[in-house]
Every structure is written in structure tokens, then in C-alpha cells.
Length: 105
Image 1 (cartoon, one colour):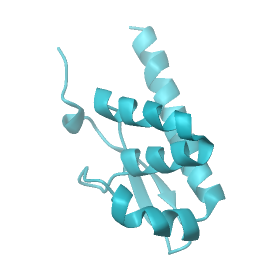
Image 2: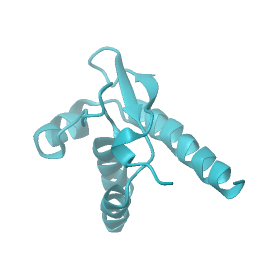
Image 3: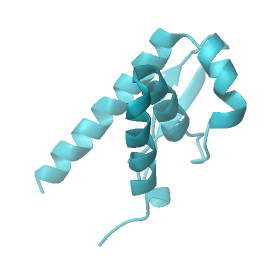
């Protein structure tokens, strides 16, 4: 039996993008989130990183941590790119483990 994406458990990673520590929560993606990130691929690596971060990053209660429109300038100009890359790598490893676990069912 399936589970709604909003009901999935959240994982988290500590991050500091340059404004002090923050806990970034994430979970498995739904189809709309996958589509949003796939569409960003045509625009290049930086856009994919931005879209992935703003799409996947959540608060402890599952709400989006960033607003893509309102926070775009701040993220693109002020956030530490190496910290963004590190957080996205953690999320990517989570996704890979989820795929592997699903394949072993």
C-alpha cells in the first residue's frame, strides 16, 4: 500500500550557508518535484543546484525552507556554494539508498 509523500519521514542534515547553522530536512520526492528538477537540467548545473535546494529543503514540519522566487538572489549571491554542494550530496546519497532499498524488495 502506498504512502503520501507528505506523510513520509523526514531526514536531516546540519548546514551553514553563511548565515549560521540551520537544519535542512528532506524526504523522498514526489512526481512534481522530480519533474521540476528534470526541467532545470536544460539550464545547467548551477540552476539544477538552485532548483534542487529550493525544491527539496524543508523545515522540521515539512514546509519549504526556501521560497524560490523570494530567496533566489540571496541564495545565488550569498550562500556558500561548497556548502550547497555538500548538502545536495547528502540528499543525493539518501536518494540512491532509497532506490537501492526499493530494488531489494
